Length: 222
Image (cartoon, helix red, strand yellow):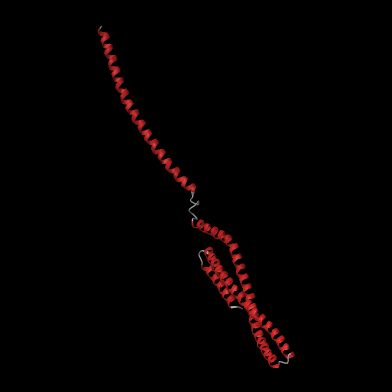
């Protein structure tokens, strides 16, 4: 397992740990996406560098192969010309390029393998990012639903459940008391008015009685 993969596993494990403790999972998801974008950018930059390095190793390998063939041809020509010293020099250089070929082939293969591994890790990063990003809106909706449910739970007993029939029974009792008080005051006032009328009527009767007696007396005198 590469160092990059181990670090990635640590990052995901840390995310899961924080997710269990977080009060705002969506914010944590956004932070995860932000960090993943940075990792993708860094991985792409490293991929470019590795690609350049791999091409350079391949160029060195191809150059070593080309020079071996060239020195082989020069050695044959020198040998045909009975120039053994020149032929041996050409063969010595060929051997040097053969050694370079072995060295650069090993470096090229290592670099090529690392480049393939980095490409796989970069694909994994992008897949992880797209997966989390595509589900972010869904989880945001779930969190919002949960928050609204929590608010409703906190308001339990406030909305409804307030014994409305009992409230109206008490209101009915109070209104009945007010009506009784009003009726009592009305009856009391009517009694006072009747008494006043009775007193007033008695006084008028006495006056009429006195007038009638006075009239009768006056007629008798006539």
